[in-house]
Amino acid sequence: MQDGKHVILCIDDDPDILETLQLILDAHGYKVVQAACAEDGLKVFKSEKPDLVIVDLMMEEIDSGTNFVKDVKLLGTDDVPIYMFSSMGDSLAMATSYTDLGLAGVLQKPVQPKMLVQLIESKLKS
Image (cartoon, rainbow, N blue to C red; front, side, top):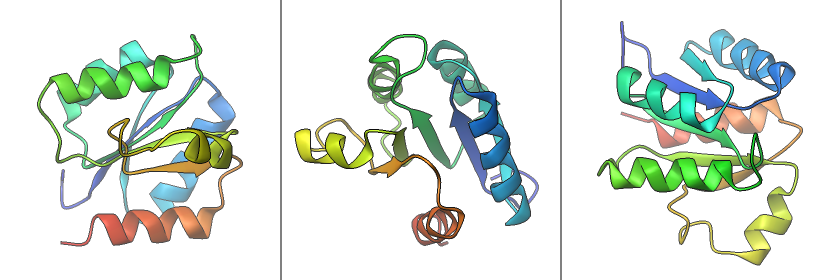
């Protein structure tokens, strides 16, 4: 939390997705920090210490999102919920257990603002 606001890290290589998330989350009082790739996302994660992360499954490499999650878990930070964002959302959830990947859940693209905000609010309740 920074300046009384929960910090949400959004990682996606699509600038339109990042802009959409920024608009939705700003409007609901969250501080949003962004990265356009998993490598930058890890740097931002270390420096900003977010309260929650939304990371795209497929960015510069097919499995860069899952690699980001593995790298974060190696840091010993199991208390930060991480949601995988994917156009394959439901298929991914059926194909593998998201908890086995170290995720709090899988979100489907395109984003549904109301559902996203409700999910984040329920996860970050103090």
